[in-house]
Amino acid sequence: NAGVTQTPKFQVLKTGQSMTLQCAQDMNHNSMYWYRQDPGMGLRLIYYSASEGTTDKGEVPNGYNVSRLNKREFSLRLESAAPSQTSVYFCASTRFGVLATLVTGELFFGEGSRLTVL
Amino acid sequence: TQLLEQSPQFLSIQEGENLTVYCNSSSVFSSLQWYRQEPGEGPVLLVTVVTGGEVKKLKRLTFQFGDARKDSSLHITAAQTGDTGLYLCAGADYTGTASKLTFGTGTRLQVTL
Image (tube, rainbow over all chains, first blue to last red; front, side, top):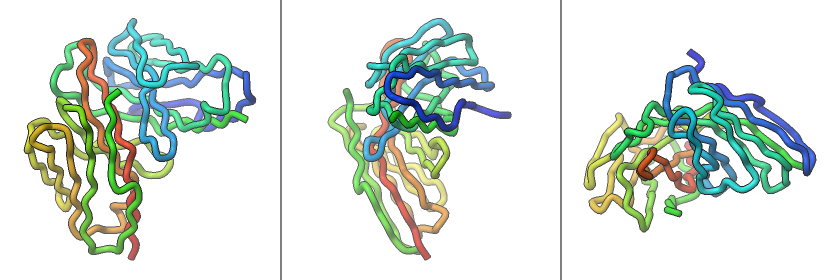
């Protein structure tokens, strides 16, 4: 059981280049999330998808776009990469979707994608 | 934006010592989770606390949720080298369409022999 799979694991881009980070989960989860992790700042939410067909902005969405391709897959796109987007990106999923109320289910994370923008 | 501040940021202790990590916010959360992250991996859930004043124990780890549901603490008794890692607290906020987790700034713990 793979859980949450992210590709690529490492990527180096030049300023202005574009790329897409792929994420897939095999746990039949409803909600999926993209976070970025920077030293001393914890994990910050970029975008999330409560269920297939819906996406919403998180705390730091500028410079990113997302696509919930189907229930399994949630991709993150950088249209024109900037050095400020150098970070480790984590995809996560949880089975709770639009019916989630008081308690958030466990987030299952991928291993991360380390992106460097020169 | 709800902010979660963790303290201390870094902690280096010897095996056998006790330690406490704090997670504080000015906002109320519906629940709070603690995660542990090792290098090169994603965070893994340790515990979820829901009720104000709740205390949960996981072997040598004790988690407490503040009465007002704005803060939490993690206490480790007799730390072991296997406890080394980044500890993250995360507060849950229900937006009406989904639950979102806001993560704290993290506490990096190093336990040496």
